[in-house]
Length: 257
Image 1 (tube, rainbow, N blue to C red):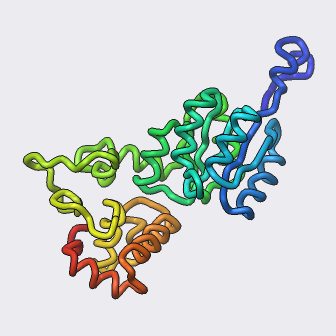
Image 2 (cartoon, rainbow, N blue to C red; image 1 turned 45 degrees about the vertical axis):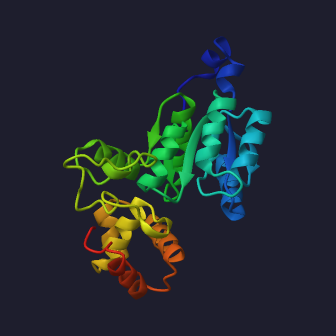
Image 3 (spheres, helix red, strand yellow; image 1 turned 30 degrees about the vertical axis):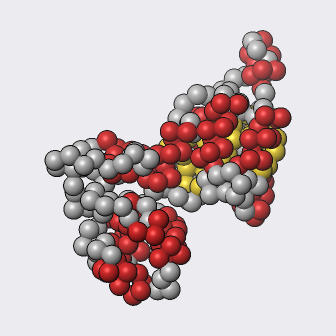
């Protein structure tokens, strides 16, 4: 990838210029973790120094091994990827975190970036995208999946679809004009631990939208929509979409998507 000749490489910083990017992989799914180890191991100028099965182990290994980049999943046991990213920012500040996860929704993107992640990719990314992202975050730049870029732009636009969840830890504003027809949380707390995004997805289900239509409406991936639906069903005790629709109407969540 570099146009440096052997002569010029030998003359300058030499060994430092040739030092591989040291990568630590954190993912709770063994098949994904092993696949990433193989992928990163084939890339020119990169070296896998360790693999962690959860966020706590990722932090522990990063403190021991001092990698340049941590490839971080978000949904992991013991310590999730967002919390692990925040811990790495404090304990191993020279390490760049590149999120590689299934989720591209606001409830995942914004907390991870606020925690200190320098890059964010979904698992739809191919090997070339992963390599480019690793090199960018290692050099101090940011690298965001196009879907994530769209979510960030939308969050900055007044009344954009991500505006309600850009500050997911803060209460919804209650002043004049704060209520939006697309915001199911503007007037009251949500039932059964539903997040604002899950309530939005539930409202779209109640409208009769398919998964593909929900993807288009929210500008997220199919995998993200499926994850939201699985979480919604688990929280509200629904076995199918018909039960979810009844729940939405019973709890005044329909017609708000």
